[in-house]
Length: 142
Image (cartoon, rainbow, N blue to C red; front, top):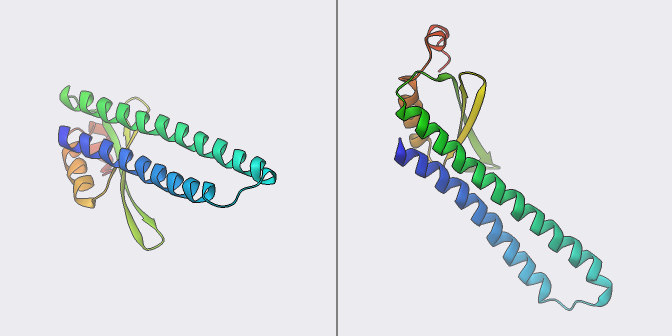
């Protein structure tokens, strides 16, 4: 479970770094062009927007880290806590962008973890099948 939690956090950090790299490349190419004073408002708007995206992305990564830690804590407690598991493949046009695993826990708590490979997502689902609540087992929600 610990390896899967690390993989989920690694994917979140990787996505953040991809966005960061794109912002750096685009911002760098903008500043290398011949800018005049009339371009200042647009450049300022771009930089403020980039900063907002990076700040929100940092909060998102921290949220994913907390969710991975929470899942590890629950899994180590050896209680039945999962009431529903959903698997979603993510595609960006024709590029596979990983797998998202959505978990509904008892009572009414939701976690979401992402993986680059479907194999890791399926491994998490297999581990969580052991922790289904009796009601979820009766419904066969996985």
